Structure formats: structure tokens, C-alpha cells
Image 1 (cartoon, rainbow, N blue to C red):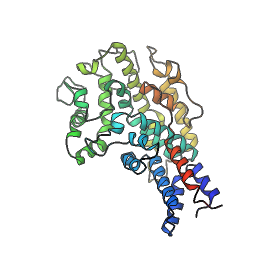
Image 2: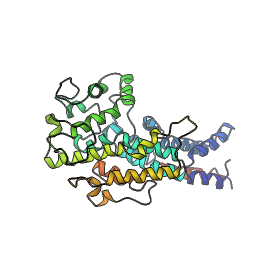
Image 3: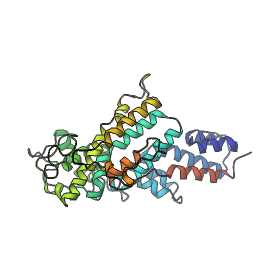
Image 4: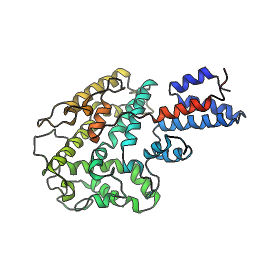
Length: 350
């Protein structure tokens, strides 16, 4: 059996991969104690969640349906089937973002700078959809997009500023949930993050913001569709601001650092000091005042207050400002770790 003191240090330090390996070695050596097998399975689950293996979260959660954290994990999953009842991160990105914020902090505790950079990059991947979620009522779910958009979306209308790649993405976003599983998986793998770029352009339209009012973060729409300008001017200006903040982050130093840290090369792995410097420059960029004073991070209150206890202070404030609601680091992985400790009480040796 695994020694209690050493194993507790692994779990408390969030080294679930090492804990899983030790427990699995005992299981493969012939120890089939139910508690030991369950602790091994929990440690494997914690490792996969920490690795952001999001397409399999629902499957992992189904194996622990009685656990309080299982439904939260299933909500952070990208559905594997086109018309799956649980839409997960296509329905709302909030659970996934809370999990990613937790992962950043745990990777920092494990002293894994490359993984911090990778997760910071992933946080930017779906930020435009996170900004649009409060307006659409979902996070760009292909199953619901046809009722949310219309007119020029996904067409070849020359008045639409979307380029050919974005037009193709828009068409797929309308039809991805109506085909087979292979097509749906291909859409999620290659097109869904690009859908955010299309939505961002729709939000930044000339019926909502005049030139020079806010930072220039990319191409805007001079001829917005009626669906893109639904709601009050105040609501549309709020959406525009949150989308621009998302795009500023996507082009920030901390995200750019990921492109200079290729896995599989001998050079370019970022140091802690490089990450800290990149984050300071990123925070300066995302929090700087805008000409019309509308930067969501400059509006005061809970959304704009950096948390010094975070590995990247202010990351939760940034995510919250983009979402238009408070999102902080979750405790899902820590809750799995607590379950490992509870189950393990009956199998550790002194």
C-alpha cells in the first residue's frame, strides 16, 4: 500500500498524475481493495481534468455521478454528439472558464510555467463567445445559432465584411449540429474558435460605435444585420466594449508568449520571470483607459479589482469583465482531490 505521508503530499500538491501512477502500480500488483481502486480512478480523473481534456469531461463525470462535483464537470464539457442534451460549454462557457482559472493557479503551485502559458492561451480562445453569451443566451451553440443570427451571416453578400474563411465558418456554425458526429467533431476542432472572430466583427458595428471612440482592434462592420443590433444602444455598446477587451487580450503579450514556446523544441520554454513580465505588460494593455472611458476594467467594482492571490493577478477580473458577470477560480479539481483523501483513509499505511 502507498505510504500515507508521501501520498498526502502528492495530493495536497496537486500532483494527481504521480498519485495515479503510484496507486495504479499497487492495483496492477494485485491489490484490488475497492477503496484503492476508487482512489486510483479519482486520481486519474483529477489528472485528466487538470490537463483540460474537455471533450471527455462528460464521460469522466458519468463515472462519478454521485459526486457533488460531477455535474459541474459535465457542464464544462464540449458535447461529443451534435444534438446531445447537455450542451455544456456550447450552452455556457462560465463553468469551463471557472475551471481554467483554477487550472492556472494549480499549474503555478506545481511550478509549471509552460502549462500556465498554454492555459492563458486557451482562456483567450473562446473569449468573444464568452462576451456574446449574455446576448445570445448561449455560447455560440450550433444547435441554436440559426435562431440567433440571420440575414448576411454565412452568405456571400458583398455587404458583409466577413472574409471567405469566416463566411465558411459561419455556414458551418449554422449546420454543424444537423449532420453526423464526424462533421460535428471537425467543426469543434477547426472552426468553433474562429466563430468567435465572426461574432466579434458583428458586435463592432458602425451603428453602435463611431470611429475613434474605442481602441482599433480589427475590422468592423459598416452594414450590420438587424439581429446584430437588437437591444438598446446601451446594451450594444456594452457588448462592443467586452468584445474589444477580449480581442485585446487575444493579441496580448501573455498569449503571444505561447507562440514562442513550441512544444518539442529545445528552446523557447518560458521562464517564470518571462511570464511575469508578459503578464504585467498584458495587464497594462487590457486595463489602459479608452478614449470614451468605456474600458470594462476601468469601470470600478468587483469586476475590475485584480486579486493578488492569483497566479496571474487580475485574470479573473479580466474574464469577469469580458463575460459581464463575476467569474472566479473554481474548486472542482480541489474537490476531486478532497475525495481522493477521503477514500484513501481506509487504504493508506503509516
